[in-house]
Image (cartoon, rainbow, N blue to C red; front, side, top):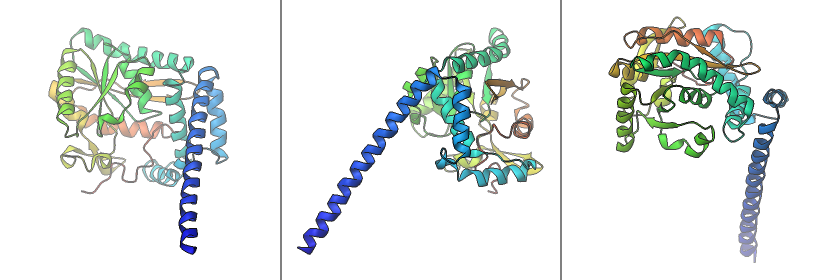
Length: 316
């Protein structure tokens, strides 16, 4: 009888836990659907102000809060900022902006993305007309998704993002909601199809059929386990220290002798783009550290990767 009671108790608890989990999941999905509806009609600055207040009250962004200690120590050590970098709010704002631009279809944000794309297109369209290959190199500020959407909107209106993880992780349906032609491929994936996609992309970029987007400020520890990761590092100096950057943009620009267009986004009552001067393939390795350092010093509150433990300072 005692054994029966124990078994019955275990299975009853398991069934109750399963019911609670399903209820929580359904509630979360319903909340997300409601949030997306609100995003379509509510002014985005109002929504972000409310969300920031909830973050300050520790009612939002709990899953990101552990990033704050690492982010603030990295900021203090590298740029000497005494102000606080709220990594939890940076992550929450990123998620809200991405939802607003895709599932939420917020008209104001989509218009801001198009305006940023128009500024970027003023730089790349002349290169395209002169048959000069170029690579778009946004930094990880505000949102990598929004940065890629901006890059996909410029001439010739089609782009592929080169990532250092599995390209299958990116949902095509979500990307299509932004009304853009954007795909992903990987430089470290062993999958032969993805390797073939990268070679086809290089050919398309060289002939001006589509754009290549690669994020040059990804920290090398993100690709530490990837094949060839140790050889994919660029030794340099950052913030007066020996550092290593991922050299994907250096290698890929060298293959097709491409000009590199570095840019980053910021958000203050609206999305803005900051475009750096063009860099030739021969000068990318020299200019890249300065571009990253100057951006981090000038826009520390916008960068998404302050919480990375190693950043660019891996000693092997």
